[in-house]
Length: 169
Image 1 (cartoon, rainbow, N blue to C red):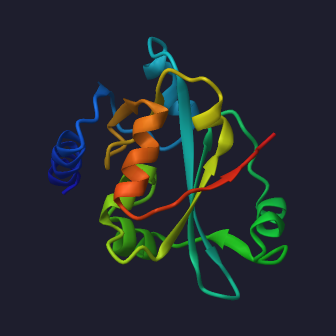
Image 2 (cartoon, helix red, strand yellow):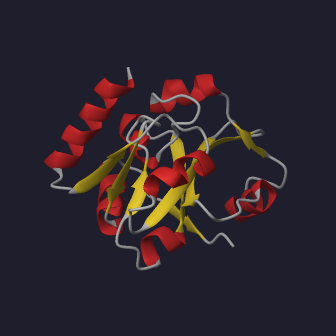
């Protein structure tokens, strides 16, 4: 399933003239498992969290630099959803909205959130930190794709996902 989605994503990026680099590796489920495969890349590797707002039932995707701490309570306060209200969303919601399962959450899956119901939070450092490339899974956790920060922003704009920029310590 994920291979077809990956090629759909790659075709879409081509239509935007977005250059990417891709590293194929065995499937990984954590950042720790992924890092040994990315020794050669230059840029920022991301971790991606798919969350739901317990009260308002809203869905959030958070992409942060892999080495940043994401405190859900602090983030909930910053986003105005009330402390303690952000939880990890279940896999069914992620499959329905982003077409990816556990371990494959990625900002690039926002292409498949056709009704823009997922709000997107982006680590400010990824686009303002001077990174050559930022890295995400391309719809599969058996690969990692890099694109330029400006191209990431253009992709988000084209898919109708204006990012909420946040700082993570």
